[in-house]
Image (cartoon, rainbow, N blue to C red; front, side, top):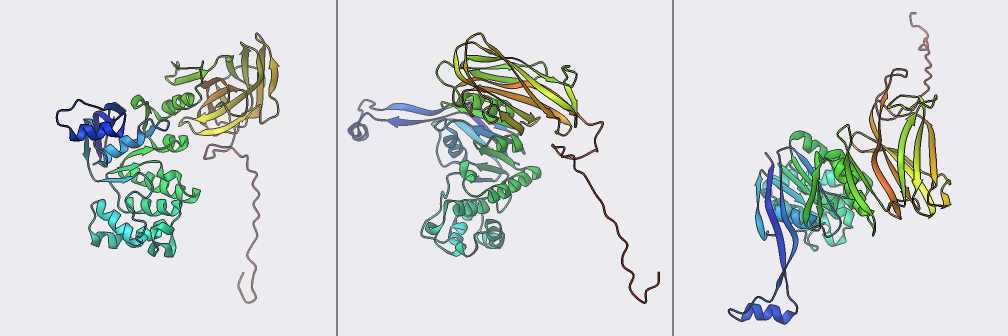
Length: 417
């Protein structure tokens, strides 16, 4: 079974002021130390149980790829320990281990051997590798003629030709067409169901939240957070929007959820309500029921332009619907400190039964990454029930109108009625 235990892990590289300092340290016995340690990863500890799936997120340079390289053994740690149980397959840098002048088939054989397979086993798996990669005759052409997407197809097909106990995937899956990405994630999900332990680095919120049990946020080489995928991704997205003067904080809500709030504070959300047709606040709505999402905003400093947006998410954090006043051509301009604004979004509840949350954003333009006045996750939590409509399956009620035409089979001559 696949088990990963990381304890006190750290990685540092030596930095020399000049190349002559490096040479002197190498050649002169008992010379003083001429370098300083640059830590790219420090004091990282976690463990992943067999069959568990964990995502790793963080900005470029946070130490994600370095962590995976140490876990797979391609880079040695400066301190700490790593314990692995089970057969490991890794897909790190695109084309890592491929020789540009060898054919795809030859590289597949070599990559399979690096994964611990015998040549006979690789040859037996080759038809499946070719079928899954779908690169046709290119399998017998030099890899230097491949596009990045073709390299990813072949590398992933080889790495997953046989189900590993532990699968480690870096950002390589972000390369290539949408069709193969869906196909790859379907295989990863099937491995998960069969008991494979998964460690994946991705900036794709949907991927992290749909296949991971938990997520780890790396920040400046340290483990800043290890929590549910939605909580970690909410905090990570808030950090991406962080600018000078902004704050990022998290609040525990009555229902146990963690609300992430960030922004400059030039405008802030006072309250959020879901209303029925009688203007009463509700926390549960029927499928097909007309409702209004009401948001009250206070302007605290003069603002040249204000956009309010909201996103409805399901219990796994997947986006169900989102819109903002910029896209609706209803952005407000030249607001003065002290003003209060009430936004009302009227719609028919077209979601399937379940629990949902509303994230809200106050910004200057279409994205909260441009002048994030306030971003608030879990601004509202509500439920959808279905006592009035047909018992449908899925997350969206489409109110399909059905017509059925039935006719008798024609009677042929000589047949008995």
